[in-house]
Length: 310
Length: 306
Image (cartoon, rainbow over all chains, first blue to last red; front, side, top):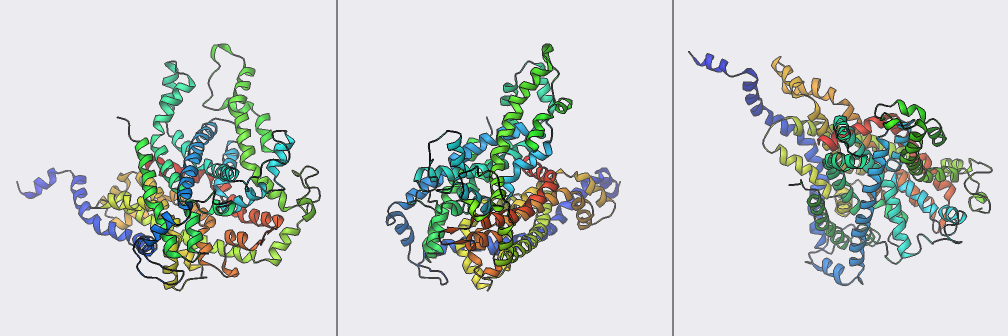
């Protein structure tokens, strides 16, 4: 009865697993090296450096001197309230568009989950707005919102929904914000839809059949099977989408660039305007860094709303 | 075109697996009306809203300068189609350069990101070592640091590396937003491959690296394709970094070139702009029409299992 027999008593796979565990660590870290190098140089370092920049009077091309919280003080107090306007707009823009994208995305996913002819084609077509480069499709929308030759207004006037000449989309504060939101919803909905569709397709059909046998209506099986089982997907999609919308730059930059009168000013655009054309990198960094705690709050809200039910 | 055909040929759908049998002997016609209200009409409405901007983009690009601003007759059709704007775009602007640059940057940064995220995704999903979970979370948390937060400090990094007006500035910075997404997606795929397959190879004497290269990675090819597709589109779409790091017209990418150089002051050359937008969209659209299933599969793996 030596050690050999005792070792044999342990199942082979178990022995291996213990040994593999020890041996996997070096390879595990090794495989992460390229990722960590790139993220370290071009993400972590600039992020930390950005915090430093925000407390200096740096300008485009040269790192300035430490000035404490001067940039933040200027941003909060000396910009005629544009800062607060930008914060409110950023929240409003994210909140309103997220609600619409969520609702429309669910509807779109439910529709795409049905059986109908040319399904593949329709699915690809509905995905298009999400795939086509944002800047390019936003240019098309800008042309559609043209102050004098707006095809949207032409359609609205000719279907007698509004009186000639129709709303000035990008020239009036409330309209410009609405336009920005409409286009964001147009572009973002397919992402929600395709994620929800992916989630729906892994829900076992037996559940629906069992519910039907028990006499559940379509609506009941939607609310008590589809929605609860979509929760993990919902969480991921909402997180990604709120973060990206909150920090959205390219769409709003092309469509309104904060105009008219800062009514569509977002933190991202305002940071760019101060930092690059304005040359005040320190101040720009201070503005964009405000996004970080706010984003954390938004993420916390999403996580709280979608927390696992007790 | 397809909109009409989908209403007309509603019948074959009845053969689909998820359609209920008629309850209480309701007539077939009834069911079709129900389906039309429930499915076809909302679908057509969604399709119309989704596709109209592209239709408008396309039709504008074929209109002559005078027709562009003539709304006295319906603007929804072209009366005298012309290729004038395309000719202008391809011969009198730097658009061909921008297209080449965009493609080059997208391909190289996609390859770099794939290399990194296949290895990282495999490591985080498959290997057991201390800290794997926290590093996985760490990579996910980088989403909280979007380009909007990084572009200003990055100008200094790019200057230090002497990469201004150089496509490498984009090739090296795009992976910061591509790698986290691809890694997250690939982790889902790797988790879906049964562990036993690799363990069998190990028992047969393969090394850990061989098991990864010969078993896990080949099985994850659909996931890698999906990740490649996402990465390529995101790179093609990128705007902020290329807006800031590139000033010389010849090194610009399509989004930046189009927004900066086809608009002269307050004058908008909509025909030319829309022609550029259409040409700039075609490559990604074509890619998608071929690989849309991988795209959905990628979402499934990432969102459902991730």
